[in-house]
Amino acid sequence: MGCFGATILPFVIVVGAAVAPHANLKRQVSQLRPSYDFVVIGGGTSGLTVANRLSGALASKNTLVIEYGEVRFAPGQFDPPTEWTTPAPDAPPRWTLRSLPNPEMGDRPAVVLAGQAVGGSSTINGMFFDRGSQHDYDAWDQVAGPGPGWNWDSIFPYFKKSVTFTEPSPDVAQLYNYTWDVSAYGGTGPIYSTYSSFQWADQHVLGSAWRDMGVQPTQECAGGHKEGICWVPASQHPVTALRSHAGLGHYANVQPRANYDLLVKHQVVRVVWPNSNPKSGPPLVEVRSLNNNQLFNVTVTGEVILSAGALHTPTVLQRSGIGPESFLQTAGIPVVLDLPGVGSNLQDHSGPMITWNYSQPYDASQFFPLPSEMRNATFKAEATNAFGETPAQGPYTLAGGNSAIFVSLPHLTSSFRQITQKIYQMAAHSTFASYLPADLRTSEPILAGYKEQLLTLASLLEQPSSPSLESPWATSEHPNSQALSFLLHPLSRGTVRLNLSDPLAPPLLDYRAGSNPVDFDMHLAHVRYLRRLLDTPILQALGGFETAPGAAVAADDELLKSYVKEKSFLSFMHPCCTAAMMPKPKGGVVDKKLKVHGAKGLRVVDMSVLPLIPAAHLSATAYAVGEKAADIILGDWS
Ligand SMILES: Cc1cc2nc3c(=O)[nH]c(=O)nc-3n(C[C@H](O)[C@H](O)[C@H](O)COP(=O)(O)OP(=O)(O)OC[C@H]3O[C@@H](n4cnc5c(N)ncnc54)[C@H](O)[C@@H]3O)c2cc1C
Ligand SMILES: *[C@@H]1O[C@H](CO)[C@@H](O)[C@H](O)[C@H]1NC(C)=O
Ligand SMILES: *[C@@H]1O[C@H](CO)[C@@H](O)[C@H](O)[C@H]1NC(C)=O
Ligand SMILES: *[C@@H]1O[C@H](CO)[C@@H](O)[C@H](O)[C@H]1NC(C)=O
Ligand SMILES: *[C@@H]1O[C@H](CO)[C@@H](O)[C@H](O)[C@H]1NC(C)=O
Ligand SMILES: *[C@@H]1O[C@H](CO)[C@@H](O)[C@H](O)[C@H]1NC(C)=O
Image (cartoon, rainbow, N blue to C red):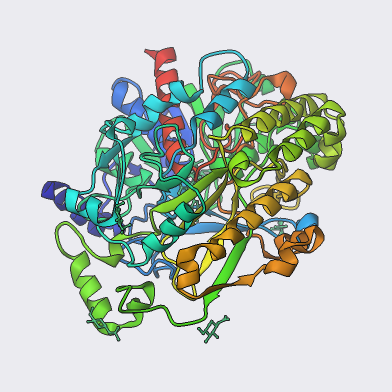
């Protein structure tokens, strides 16, 4: 396996410094071919997956990827061997978007990052590489309507295809009690995942505590059954331990390839059909040079694949005249297709944390090493040396951590039916309209689609094997003693809209977190459940005591609600669902072949197309969607 290290490491050095990129990397439109068969808008996680697969399978067809950012592969934040929490000086650039204030969350904004480099958000994410539960994809397929499948059985082969998973060695597995099941893997995709040979000495403390609370260890959570205590691999190389991302696996490592071009530092403004007729064939792609602001139309003979991510895909559509009619009119953009779902249906994971402290110092003789040891110069020097070994060893290989609990509503509260009944009632009496964004409350398609989502979610949340809460961890040492609560299936819906004073600027995000009040019922149930951690024998023995929210606050619905409003992270960086795969009469934007309703030669392939956010961090799903999309497109063209 040493050869992998040998091929990746020099690459990082050469391309990270961006010295002499190969000929297929274009920086000016004058370097482009006269036309392209396929143009992919956005060289991110899903987009590069599609571009690699299309250009690899169809040698006679040319593919161009147009990317806003640069080729930047130097290790950045979250990347070994940098400190996990400190951004490296030449970390890949990202957008930092601040949403409008969230009225239900103390008027605080959500702060949302997105990757702005070749590889997209896979170059800056936390490398936590999990898949949703089978229920998530079955629910997606159900609300997406009739047609070829996106249920678990249909997408599982693409999860497998996307990744090469490397098992931990038997002694490492035994040391930490890693469990896995190779039947969830078996693919040889260009993205790598594995388990670190290092864990902090107290990783098992919370594992024991969850078991004391009755959470069951799960052998493998990537095979569709995801409820209980999960080990989750990281998207990193098994030998170098470096980040594995789309910019490497689906671009740099497959170049040079004669029919696969990449244009960087260009913003796609819009797609344009001659005579504004969206049925007339593939559109032109209008790009803007970030260097000199010049506009240029790229000619497309096959089709355009829009993969700018859930925050930017709606901006390209809206600038193209595809979106909610009333909004486009306000913006002064001629309406090409009235699709109210464009930039609507925004979802993300969010939630507060519980925190605790210890009445006595953590016993260092019992636990060595702990994360605080990184302040010990000797330990840190050893860690640096260990990372340089082949294969890489030590704390720098850990990325963010590999463990989380995923708990269903029936397993965390005996009153779960009161919560799901509220959702059924809401759907039956159409009271849900008032929870939608003001300009969508009278849109028949949006109302029909949201009602169907609510009914599907109520039944999803009743499944004992479908998680509602996630809490990840790597250590429980003070001062990092907190357990985050991820609301996995939010009912609130937000919007992404162009900034009318500057349509080329980052969009306006209206997260609307907590706008559907049932989200608070779930947050409260989650926090009350997590608090039980402090009653477990193992945390008691360590002297753990709760610092927030505390018994008095937790006993009172209104106080606990205020706590959630004040403390919640409003984005765990999983925005999605803004060009949803649903039928047009239900507010959908794309059909089950990812084609934009009413348009010819335009598909969307990224995290915008999910109708419902799954119970997972999104990168593994972004690769799987790219893989499956490529097969669908190849089926249409070969
Ligand atoms: C900080 C952070 C941490 C995360 N942590 C995790 C994690 O630990 N595990 C996990 O699984 N997921 C995580 N995620 C989420 C996951 O990485 C993303 O959901 C996923 O990568 C999104 O893939 P995508 O293809 O939809 O979009 P992206 O990968 O974001 O790609 C979109 C691309 O389009 C480009 N673009 C945008 N607009 C234009 C335009 N107009 N013209 C040209 N190009 C354009 C962008 O520059 C970008 O390269 C995290 C995300 C972030 C931001
Ligand atoms: C691993 O599992 C064994 C048997 O269940 C247990 O005795 C041991 O404490 C566990 N070790 C860790 C680090 O969790
Ligand atoms: C691109 O083509 C459209 C439609 O023909 C046209 O309106 C627009 O001006 C063109 N843009 C550029 C930069 O040539
Ligand atoms: C945590 O407890 C320690 C004593 O174990 C104390 O010194 C420290 O101030 C406490 N920190 C907080 C934030 O309560
Ligand atoms: C610092 O790290 C070294 C090397 O691991 C270790 O031997 C030593 O005990 C540590 N010192 C302290 C104070 O933790
Ligand atoms: C919208 O764009 C204008 C002009 O670039 C900018 O000043 C303003 O801050 C943007 N609005 C938001 C909410 O980002």
